[in-house]
Amino acid sequence: MGAVVHGKVHVEYQGVIHVQASFNNTIVTVTDVRGQVISWSSAGTCGFKGTRRGPFCYSNRSGNAIRAVVDQGMQRAEVMIKGPGLGRDAALRAIRRSGILLSFVRM
Image 1: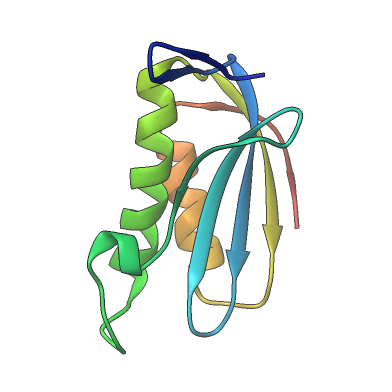
Image 2: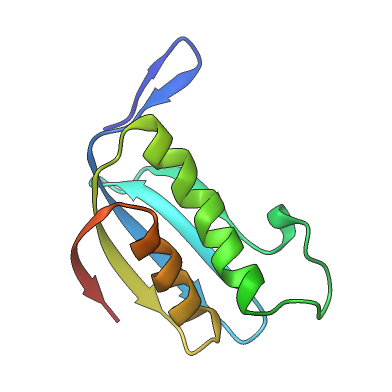
């Protein structure tokens, strides 16, 4: 469980990365093992508006959500991918490049 210490969240070394990919948007949510949200990212948080979304946008938003938890100490993760959208592959590539060890990937 992420314990709050002086306004900062202490992240456990293991977590779950949820990728929800629709045709219009891709949302990446990082949770701890108990399901409490640690970090999340989507196109709007990265500054992409309207139809200007492409593979770079998908990998960029995945990297933003994961970079925050890697800096806080997360080392291992399970990946749950849901939906038919275009951001599935780009998000998985960004997760693998981040340096987190993946225990399994469920699609």
